[in-house]
Length: 75
Image 1 (cartoon, rainbow, N blue to C red):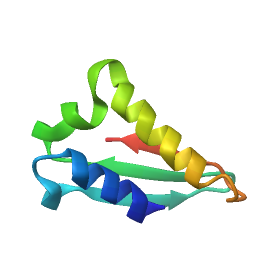
Image 2 (image 1 turned 120 degrees about the vertical axis):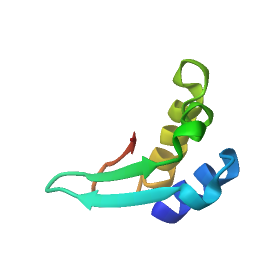
Image 3 (image 1 turned 180 degrees about the vertical axis):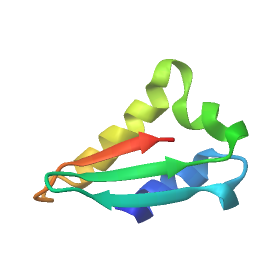
C-alpha cells in the first residue's frame, strides 16, 4: 500500500521528490505516515480536508482484504 499512497501523493504535489512514506505495523493496525514538502501540505490536505479524506478512502478501499486496518496520517 505504500506504493499506492506514494503514487497518489506524487501526483498531487509540486515537489514529488520530497514525498516520503513510513509504514509502521502495530499489534492491531498498520499506519502509513505521509511526509511532504511544507509548501505542498495544503495540496495534500485540500480545502476542509477533502483531499486527505479522499486519499484515506482510496487506501481503505484498497486494503479491505488486509487482515489489519490501515490508517493514513499526514505529517
